[in-house]
Length: 450
Image 1: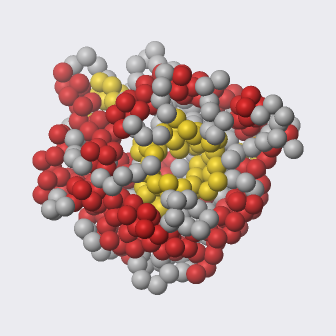
Image 2: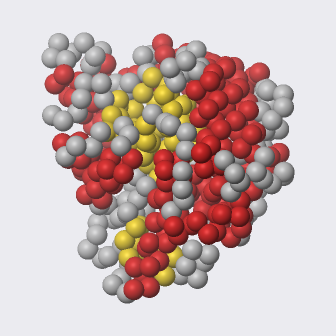
């Protein structure tokens, strides 16, 4: 076994995707609430008004995690629930919800991993320019301070952002996600201001939380040319700069990748790069599959192409290439020299409740087995990987796909909100128990058998 005894096995979710209670107890609109009101933007015009109703069912969800044997849970805090206007007066009812969630996690011996931002910017701040407005770095730091002072006595693990490459590129560059902007200048402003907000938030968390362990969560996928053409090869390099390097590079090395430097330069002020490159404690990785890239006419000159015919695909058409996961972990280790936590990995499937009331999701089990094996291979080759969090705990609202994609290891019945652990949940629980048993022969920490 290459997994260390202190390895964290967890699951991840995000506030907007599971909480629901969109207009209860003082929560105001996020950019996604507004974006979803325009018809045709999401599969079946789904909304997250109720989502998984985690706001009311969090205690049962924590009990599920405990029964599975998880020892860590990554969740996000909803900025518009805590600060309905994005700044100014805090909402006590929203703050109290996360008090209850954190206390329930600690009572279940599950370490809370708190992500400050998983895409749900308060609409009130978007009205002021959102991530295009340089002032947002300060607004984000103030929000981080509120979170740190309220929860820092119980939470020590903090992530600033989840997948900044996705919400900037899709939200401000290509117009596919909220707030639905497709503009070159908007994208590059957003990239720089998110990086600046990251650095400001790191300083605040260090100041206000004793023993804080801080990182950011990056979606990092190899970008392969879709063909042998020189045009596709160049396009793959351009997409890789935006997708893989636009945030980790300035945060680690105080510089943008060469492909982005000229576009971002007009928005960089004196001292910005030093402010962005604040020391962090770990590298958060989200990984699903490689990108196969072809030349395109968008602002990057690159488009997402289909994988080669011989590459296996998931139920939603994403390539299944576990060796790319192994290589990505080794590349991060080589480049950034930080402990790595895999904070999202998983797959969607066409899950169906059978006549016995069970969900036999063998495809997901195969994926998780292949990818966790690839992770062990990377660890054996020297990658400093210290945790793995499956995406996702629950079938949830999957952004543009609405509820048409089920990523959870726990099935959620949309009509009743009933939770049903899938076969993959049992597999994951048993794998965790097996690793623990190898380090703890007496089985003192094997919660799955309690």
